Image (cartoon, rainbow, N blue to C red; front, side):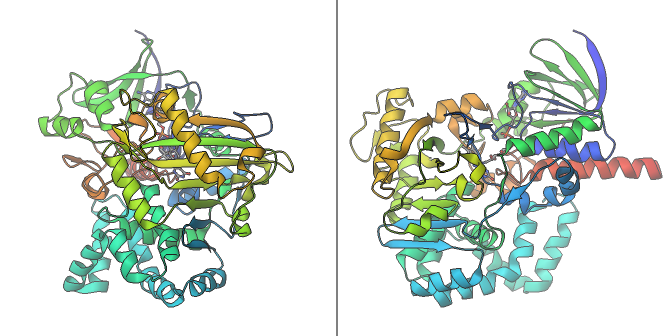
Length: 536
Ligand SMILES: Cc1cc2nc3c(=O)[nH]c(=O)nc-3n(C[C@H](O)[C@H](O)[C@H](O)COP(=O)(O)OP(=O)(O)OC[C@H]3O[C@@H](n4cnc5c(N)ncnc54)[C@H](O)[C@@H]3O)c2cc1C
């Protein structure tokens, strides 16, 4: 074992949280080493011309509203701009095609207002936005703040001042309400409900889960105000720009660098050991963007960790699995019932809120849904550079999949031993494409290449996505917000001094916001600035 160069911080993993943390620390003068076990950086950002030359696919995550609307982008924007990162946006972030009709949601309030009015829900939409918009600062605060720090007391005080003690109790109930009863109360049209309800899926929830109404309102408002931005050329451009902030400041990104141990001396993290035996030391901090199990069972194996934290990490649950289907099309998709859909970034195709509820529940219990919610992403609607002129691509996401298959609600696919082998994955993907083909009339004839990534493939691409869970941990309320990553180890501190836990398994959870990396890096940078100036 050789101890080589010394860094201020070593960051394990190169997902968005790691790269944001590395960039923020580099900007503050820290020398950073990022260790990534894969051959390339970015984690769940994986842009490749994977089907045919000229067709640029986001194999995993694709949409950047969380990043563009979040504090990390505001902080790093100048540096990212200098490195040529450009975002494009759309007026039509989302739409729905369901059995009761179609609808779109626009960043233009007049268009959205007219759409809800057409559905008989004009007043319901404006009432909801009128009531929720003034609470958005608190909602984003709750989802973005370091909940276990004194600074978050300010948020609590603001909420108390605004709502009073009794009012806070009511706000608590509003926070915990499931989406299904709220949508039934708020909207008349099944189309309005189907337009908004699938958005809870994108935070790992279903419409019957606690807090899914709150998440649906937050995402609906965020999308209505912020659209659906994507980087021109793909997420790789963000990965490259963040990496270059780190390397320009003297830091390094090592790929094929699998960290197998955090070095702990005198109860403090001082470095890491790679699987090939190389060691690196960190003078100030080690940040681990891993699952709780990887952190406490592997990287800290043999170290002194309170038993309740170990047990809590052992019990950390993973959510439903994801499936991604990528299509290269020789021409743009033709939508049968509503031609406007061709310009929409993300169209949800489903029967309605009942099929959504049934599919989520089926997947939670181990069953393949009969009528899954098909998330149809159309990156070319925002960034036409993703495909050759006149051609297109489709990014399909399925979120209602069991990790282990026990049965099929449609009684067509034999679950066999329950694993997502090639045969079962392809049979299920074909069924979904068949269903989508009834809405996109040229789907079959225009498809010139296809890639299907199942839960096994997704986990193989990123070991934090255990069982194919795209969110690195079940996001139901007992593992969310103040309880993420663990009820016994809240926040980003760990029981080991100078070792910080970041990434999607930690608060504020999954998504391309870079929130946990940003919170920890800002905290560390502030601490070291205070130490330099005041010596403490
Ligand atoms: C299919 C899919 C689609 C999604 N779509 C969207 C979307 O459109 N918009 C959105 O906002 N969010 C989306 N998400 C969620 C979002 O992409 C993730 O929550 C986010 O990217 C996670 O970032 P992270 O910083 O936690 O790290 P990850 O991106 O999970 O990366 C972690 C990295 O750490 C590495 N690593 C782990 N252990 C070690 C170790 N011991 N040593 C070295 N390296 C290690 C892994 O190899 C990996 O590269 C999607 C996720 C998936 C999977």
